[in-house]
Image (cartoon, rainbow, N blue to C red; front, side):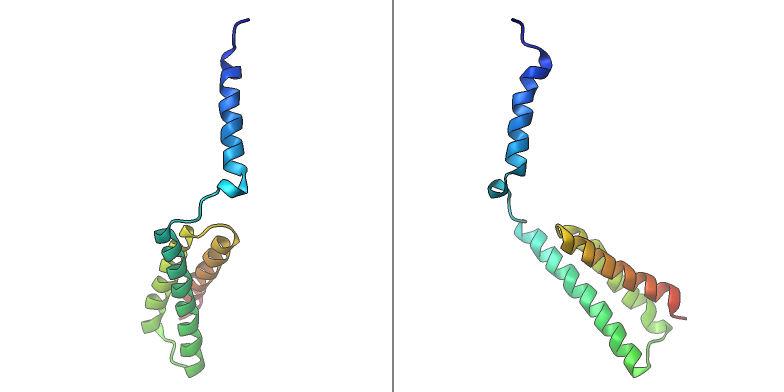
Length: 106
């Protein structure tokens, strides 16, 4: 009986699927990627905290708008290093801060 080309690949595909899905074989994030993720969370927090402080003091002006917006944008970009729900939360927080600063402060 002649082996068909798709039967030969199916064993390899099944093994790869099992190895990719099995939780004990998943790798943790590399250290540099974890550091980028923590950095993105810290940067996003600092942009929110800085804006809250400046708003409470009444000194949020056009001079502070772009530095804080760029800080939020940097946090958003670095958030792509995260994985899972934390990635989406950090991206949403950074994007909301960036959009809020660039479209509402005048």
